[in-house]
Each structure stands twice: as structure tokens, then as C-alpha cells.
Amino acid sequence: MVITFTVLLIATSLLLILLVLLHKGRGGGLSDMFGGGVSSGLGGSSVAERNLDRITIGAGVIWFACIVALGLLLKTQG
Image (cartoon, rainbow, N blue to C red; front, side, top):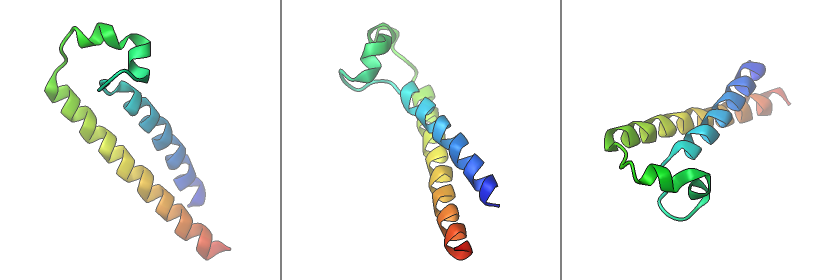
């Protein structure tokens, strides 16, 4: 059971990193360094941004649940 939650935690961690990097930059940050100026001229769809927000929040909730579950499992084992 611990191995399952650990694998899920690693997978959601990598997914969260990817999803956060996909978000549209709101200022001169790291996203502008990797071609943010090119994508800002395209406009971008607000529906796609909202869907990306929802997916990111869902992955964050799963990540948080894995942290809590692993903490409880390891507390009861040790």
C-alpha cells in the first residue's frame, strides 16, 4: 500500500511540475525566458486556461491526499 501511494506521489509531483510550467505567464518570470513573448502574441483561449487550472487543482488535491495517506500509513507502521 505504501509503494502504491509513493508511486502515485511521484507521478503527481511530475505532473504538477509539467502543469505549472504550461500555465501562461502573468509577468516577466520563468515562462518569458522560454518563449513567453511568442505565445503572448497569439492571445490564448480562456477556456483552455480554465481547463488547465482545473486539471492543476485536481492534480494538487490528489498530491495532497497522497501526502496525508502516506503520513498516516507510515505513522501506523512505525
